[in-house]
Length: 209
Image 1: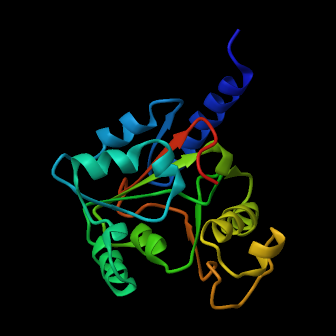
Image 2: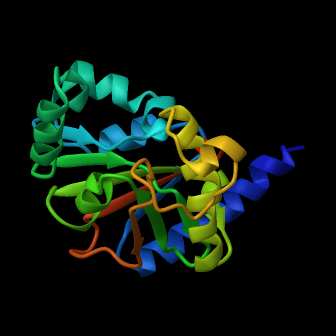
């Protein structure tokens, strides 16, 4: 007998792929082959960059492209100023890799950002954007998606970056307005334009947060 979690994920994944394609996203559901699917979408001569994403690291994509592609990698910067300049250049790469903080069952993507570079790349610049997202990020409504971005993604990232925000202290969003906040930009992507520029790979397990 098949694992019921695997069966449920396959059903949800197939449904989401249809919803995403109806919004002009290119979309795929992968149980275990997310890395292979992502690489199949990237031309071998592409220049690659990425936003801060645990998901692309967890499936091995970040490590692979660093070894096999020309990359615009902000982690090579020696100063904050150089890092910011590299992030600007990343907006003109061929393929930008990222995740989503939440995805609704209707196929809308929600991202919350501190500097705005991830959200900016999603909206305009790179020739294509590949989004890696685990099914743990799927929620029912747009309101729930925004809540997830605040309460789950942002609070964990506040810990990851050792920020001095209310959520870093109490583990839940404090709707803060302080210098350390990483909730400066909230972007809802309800459709891909041009069609298929944004490619969403849904992973049938928990990936990222």
